[in-house]
Image (cartoon, rainbow, N blue to C red; front, side, top):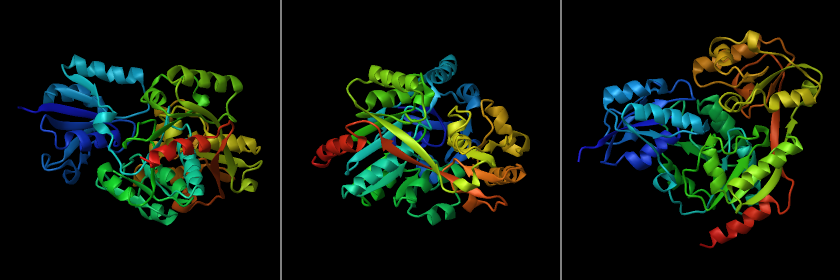
Length: 441
């Protein structure tokens, strides 16, 4: 049988995982190319032969998604597979229309074809949208499980943006994170876990990661990226919803699927949203999934050095995905600056290089600086932009400790997050009740 020519639409995460578990040894398909979206500096690279396997001795090229129609035409693509997250349903179908117009079939691979089975129980924390507070909830669960005498190991959704060849990454301390020469977005996600004593696994090959992770703890705690589904088959799925994004519950892929698949729904940030938004989010969650348990949680933020922020001129640096493709104009950095009576200094006039371009690419951005740092050059542009801004203090809404990464000539303060229960039974109680059953299997 002649293999069908396939193209995978991705963003250096779900696409690579789907390739590894479904396509790598599948004689029915020949993957001609990946395309890249959302994340800069991953297009015009190659998925390495080391990971692609014997059927792909030259690796697999990664092209810009804008070339989809041309690639279908020139390469005779039979099948286009969509494999990334946190996009509208309309966005997915626009790409499907391009594929169909070019004569190709369009596909989404589901959990039965992509989720790996673990020997240890898996608790998956996923979201309806990026920036909803998944990692904060994951850290809450980590502490709750340790209090019960259970040792979790955290596995983070992939972000191999700087290096495609790291099949397995393991971080145990902040020093491990700083020494790893990774992107700032990766630092944002790993650092907050290791700072509370967790071991974090990530990388590109999640079968290899699973073999190591399940030897390190009693439970695998999956911390999802964007609003993607888990790569491991969960015993318990916890889906986090954000009332600050009212009306988006059934508008994004695969966030709607995560809500429908949840065992426990968490309506987060109820202390930041107005009561109408909270009530409407609960109603939307119940409309999509009436069987799941539902809890309310606050996401509280504190500043480690409030005296550096109060009534000062402050540059707020926000977690990049939340305020870029996540769609918010500002986030917790700006909110905490205002709460402390600070004046936000608008960085737009002082941005250089790709940081300046970000304000054109994401016109909804407000008077904050996204923590973009996907390459050495972009990290330097971020540093130069920070130094250009005439402010008294740099306030880090991003979990990444940029003060340890850059040499800055300004005082730095950091925002820290904690999740707190605001309903009964608590998330801790619901999770433990369900998890005891899973651990007895």
